[in-house]
Length: 201
Image (cartoon, rainbow, N blue to C red):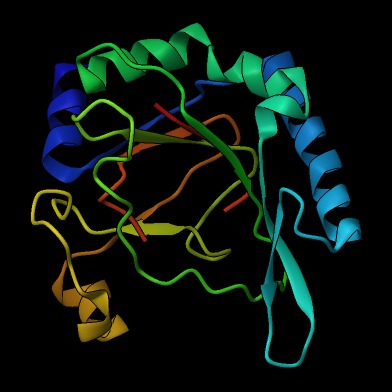
């Protein structure tokens, strides 16, 4: 809606519910489960990423090049509803440039500190890119959902290390982004802090 588009430009993020549904969602979840198993078992850094802990152990948390791994990741990227939302939010021609799979394993204890993504990436359109996180599971405050600070895509670089977590969560107005399977979180790359499939346009 026009109100949601305005919210996106004001806050830097907006949620669309039930974008991916039915057989498409099921196929995406099944492919993601396979990739998760491969990532846990592989223990290498060939398109899988691991967090190295102080005790010497490693925890799988991310995979790259998803479009090459299973056709469902390409199909979901060009889902007509998803592309329509993209077009409404970005307001100019766009193309997919990056795809990733982010997986927060139970008790994985892989910290994701507050951060801002780059507002623009090399060799892309000069207008800031949009990240779409397609959720495959329920993400809530209780299980560690993403938090965002509204409006901080407009203030330039923020040195988060100069603030305590208490300040970031309370004084700066952070809000939790709770989603369910098939929901999509759109956010400006400079706005934010997951099992999700991410497509950046």
